[in-house]
Image (cartoon, rainbow over all chains, first blue to last red; front, side, top):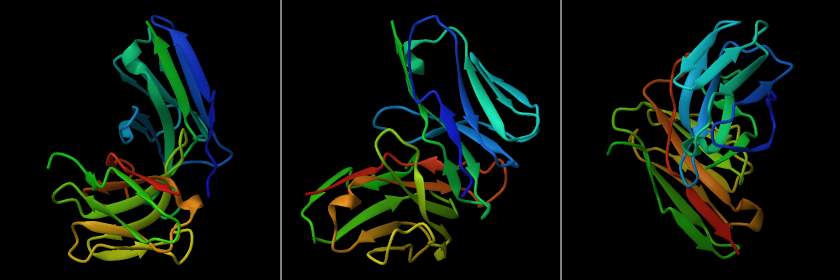
Length: 111
Length: 116
């Protein structure tokens, strides 16, 4: 099983601040996905990164895949209370269909 | 429906009882997955179906857990002789196909199982 380490585990910030969360592994991944999970709901896919060094932007969210495809980061600019949730990174297992998830970063953005 | 639905949303049972958790995937989705999620952590893979065929059950914790998808649509996850350690959120996901970098899994709201 590929181990995905996410940091920090918890993050509490004020509205308008910037933040970065990380997803690291000793394994090389063919792709990596980021999900956001709001309280009481299931995870929702935000982005898939495939190419080493790839940067994808989704409004105020910027996702980067490490050059060696072993790590990824998610940067949020000017966080808003609506960004509150559990941010999960996931990679396809060797089976090619099951997802292995990290433990997530729980983000709280207060007004 | 518009998304993956699961029922019941909450299930409280006594130790030793059997429970059946239902998943109704997005119409037309070929692949169906069951995951278990502990509070504040990421989902953990349990089993996978391609149409009606259970192609991977390597994540099922023990033989008290079983799953079926007899007609390639609705799936049931059954836990026999429940134990307190089975308490968790059980999530179902479906996808249009299986595999591939951009194959998106859509998750249901989950069933919160509590074993007393």
